[in-house]
Image (cartoon, rainbow, N blue to C red):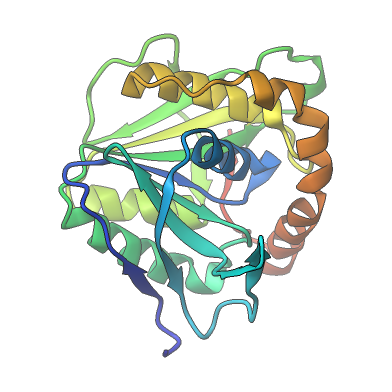
Amino acid sequence: MSDEMIINATTKSREPYAIIGLPDVGLVGSIATAYMIEELKMREIGYMDADIYHPLIIVKNGEIKRPIRLYEKDNIIAVTSDMPVTPAIAVDFAKVLINWLKDLKPRLIINVTGIPVQNRISIEKPEVLALQTNYTNKINNVRAFNDGFIMGTYASIIKECYNNNLPSLTLLAQTYLNFPDPAAAMSVLNVINELLKININLKRLEEEAEIIKLKTRELMKQTESAITKSKVGVPSIYR
């Protein structure tokens, strides 16, 4: 393997929905995709990796896993990561992933992330905003993200979608900056349920919110560290 990012995945999906959830503010994308993968019992189909990436493997139930993995079920592909995608590989990551998805002629690429708000503690149900690129379908009960800026890996992904004329939708849930936020992930999954006409049961996510916060504390620390070291940060979105 070289320093270049590679993708090793096999799928039977054609014109799929692709859902990308990576560690960033509030771990919204990480929590949402991990829960969706488990709840829908999605099948692992491959991974992404590079020598320049963290020298890390994940062990789950005695099996060795790569940090960045791909899953699928019923023509839905999910991309998740157990480590922050650092700025050093963000552009390469986006190019390799989007080039791979492009061959599948995706129906829609959905980025799941968060937008930090100062008054998050007083918000009972986080609002979800949407940024649409090459995609004009109306999304019910979601306000457009009209002003602000996006940086990091999600910016690279959106740019690659735009350059390749691929439909993308970035869902941004109001969240804490430095704390895992299962409620924000739940808000995004509600939108995905309606958009894809699927039924991800969110009851367990609500019941296990405190457990999830504890389990994801270390990933949140790693994400914070990556943001601090890079200054510009891994996927960060401000408004």
